[in-house]
Structure formats: structure tokens, C-alpha cells
Image (tube, rainbow, N blue to C red; front, side):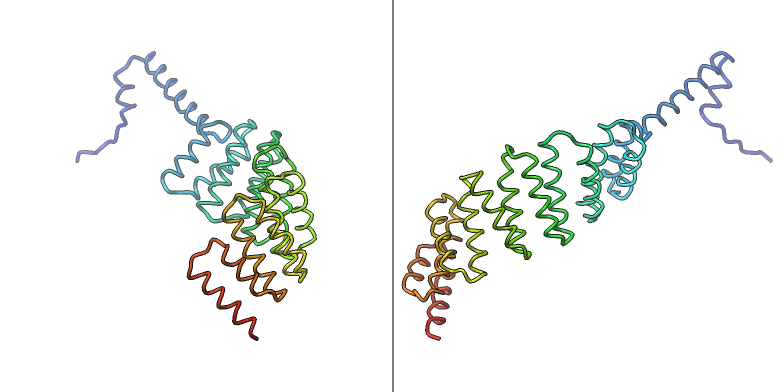
Length: 274
């Protein structure tokens, strides 16, 4: 009976070569294996590439595990930061895990000294907290983001969003404070801050104060959408004050589709007759 023997290509070559060449070939193979192991080690950039490859193959779970290995074992700060950035992205976008993504970004923030980058990371953490239904914590992080880099172009937007989130989730005092800071430090954003404050005042029943802010915002903004919001707010205030004719006049000035405007007019007229 003929016995089949499986012989590797390396074994065949080693049989044909002199002993010295065999030793060299063995040493070369060992060196290549060692180099491959080192390159894919989580301590070196190759560890990141393994994660990237897994992500490219549609395995975000494997990619996340590989990035985690890199963050734990790499002694190089630059590699650790890149791994945390990619891990946060995979958990937030691919795996739908905002809690883990936030923790990665919080760790990355602690490793970041540049104020522009720190502000950007704090902003991302804030929006992840909003996804986790922690709105007041989100507002706090957005405020910290604005304060971390006040010269950044996004600073007034971050502070305005913090104020709007606080206003919408039960902290009007903080919202007023933040809107005031926006209006004082960034005059271009004054109209948006006034609209935000006016909406809070209107909910609190302080109609005259709200009307004054809505009118000021409408007169000083070049943003068409913001002007529409301010005009509608002023119309609502005038209606509550019993001035239907002026409220309808304000409504006519709002940039609204005809059907929407007609519906609002009928609603105001019906309410005034009650």
C-alpha cells in the first residue's frame, strides 16, 4: 500500500539546499514570522491596520476588539489616540453603542492637550450624552466645549446649543445665563440668543418681555429661518395680549407657505371668538 506523505514547500526546498543554505532559509523564515508578529502587534501601527481590515471586511465587532487591544497595550501616545478615535467611531456609528463611544472619547480628551481638539472632543461627548438621554449633562459638556476654545468659530454655536438643550429640559435659569453670554460675547448671534430667551419667557407667561425680544430679533437678523421664527413668536405674543389685528399682520409678514399661513389665521380667529 502506498502511503501518502504531505510535504510542505519549505521542506522540499530545505532538502534540495546545502546545510548552510538551509540554516539561512530557516533564519529568514523565522525573521519574517517575527516581523509579521511584531507588525501586527497592538503595540505598533500594524495593530491599527488589522482593525481597519476587519472594518473593511464588514466586521466592526472584530475591529472594535482590535482597537481596544491597541489602546491597552500600545506604549505610543499617538497610536493610542488614533485607536481611541477609531474605536469611538465604530461603537457610535457601526455598533450603536453611544455609552462605549463616549467613554473612549472621554479617555481621548484626557490625552489631548490642544485646546481646539479638546473642544471638538467635548462637543462630541456632549452630543453622545444627548443620545443617552442625559440632556443636562450634554448641555454642561457643550458649555465646557465652548469655554475650552472661545476663539473657535464653533464656540457660539456650542454655547447656544447648550442653552437650547437646557431650556428644553427643565433648566430655564441656566438657559437664560447661557443665552446672555452668547449675546454679550458674540453680537452676530444676538438674534438667536434673543429668540431662545423669548421662547422661555413665553412659556413662563411673561408675554410682554418675550414680545420685546422677538421683535428685536426679527429686526436684527439676516437669517431668513430665524426671522420667521421670531415673527411667529411675536404674532403669538400679540394674540395672547388680545391684539388680533396686529397678530394677523405679523403672521402675514412671516415667510410661510400659503396653506400653513391660512391654517394659522383660521386658528387665531377661532380662538379670539371663544
